Amino acid sequence: MSSEAPTPVLRGCIKLPLAEDELLEITAKAKDYALMHGAAMRSKTTFSPDTLNFAPFLLVPSSFPRKEFEKAVALQPIINRLMHNVAHDEEFITTTLAETIKVDEFTANLFNIYRKVLAHGFTQLCAERTWTCGKVEKYAQK
Image (tube, rainbow, N blue to C red):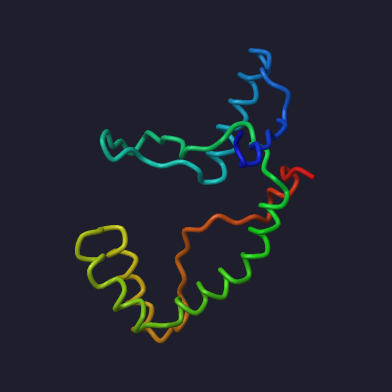
């Protein structure tokens, strides 16, 4: 007999499967929403100035345990403070990214923008790649 607790099963947020016509309508609306809100990108392999690809997104939200959601919400102010402190520490950023900017074009471009902003006397620049919890609370299970 195993001493591990069984893995809880979360209930779905939306009744599935959806009817075909409803799925097609929701998919079309989701793509329009994504396009209008900047969730599109150009392909690097088959670049065309007239073609966009959608950034990956979920059509149907996943349920998420409330306790884990609350942990993430509680951690967010700590992460915000960390990011603020890092964004204002020129020596840390320069030292930490020294090797990365040699091999990663995206990071090198961001770092060049950072240096230009500093050269013009601005002391605040923060480019973030984080996920925030603010709009997903309604999907957390009770």
